[in-house]
Image (cartoon, rainbow, N blue to C red; front, side, top):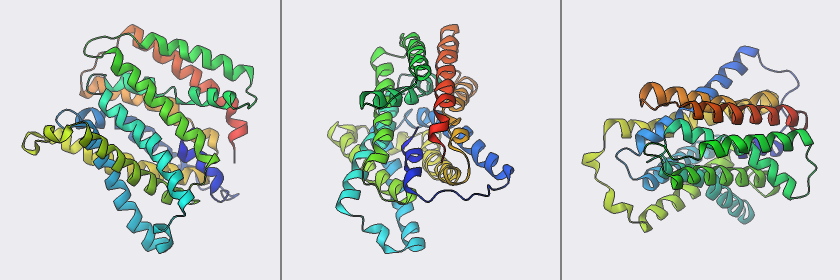
Length: 312
C-alpha cells in the first residue's frame, strides 16, 4: 500500500457505476509500465547528475507544477493548508520522496532491476508495521511476509558493482516508503490527494535538495558534463513518473477496486528487470530470478489475502 492508496480513505468514495473496463485497464497499464520504468529513469539520471540534487529538483518541479494548476482549478485555498496539514505533508514528504532520493543514491551502484525487487518488499513492511501497532494480521499474511523476507535475504549478496551498503539502502528506502504509507491515513493530510501530493513533493524536494547541498554535491554539478541520457531521465521522471502515472493512479483509486489497483506492486519489478536487461545490459542471475520469484509471489499473496479489507 502506498501513501496515495492510503489517502483513498480521505477522498469521496468512488461512484457505484464503474467506468468502462478499457479506461481502467489503460490507467492500470500506465501505472504498470511507467512506474516500473522509473528505476531505469533513475539509473540514467544518476549517470552524470548528483543523485540528491537531481532527485530534489525532480520533486520540487512536481510541486511547482501541480500547485498552480490546482489553485487555478480548485481555488487559492489549496495554497493555504492548515498547520497540521503542512506538518503532516512534510513528514510524508520526508518518507516518500525521501525514499526515492535514497534509491537514487543507491542506484549509483545497484542495478535498476535489483533495486526494484528490493523496494517491492514495501507491502511486507507495511504488514509488520500494522502488527507492531496491535492490528490483527492473518496467519497467511504473516507467513507470506516471512517467505518474502527470505527472498529479500537472497538478494542481499553484493555482485558486480553493487555494494552491500547500496543494497541495504534500497531496503531502508522500502521501510521509509512503508512508514509513509502506513502513516498517511492516520495523520492530517490535505483531503484532496492531488493537493496532498503537491505539498509532499515540494517540501520533500526542498529537504532532499538541501541535503544534497549540505553533503557537498554542489561541487559535483557540471552541466556541461550532463549526458542527454541523464537529462532525459530527469525529465521523464518529472513528467511521466510523477505527473502522468500519479494522475492515473489517483483516478484508479476512485474508480476501480483497490485489490485490482494494488497489482502494480508485483508488476513493477518485472518491468524494471526487463528494461534494465534490455537497455542497460544488466545481468539477470539465477539467484536474482529465485529471489524475484519469492518476493513477487509473497507480495501477490499478501495483496490477495488483504484485498477484502482494503476495498472501498
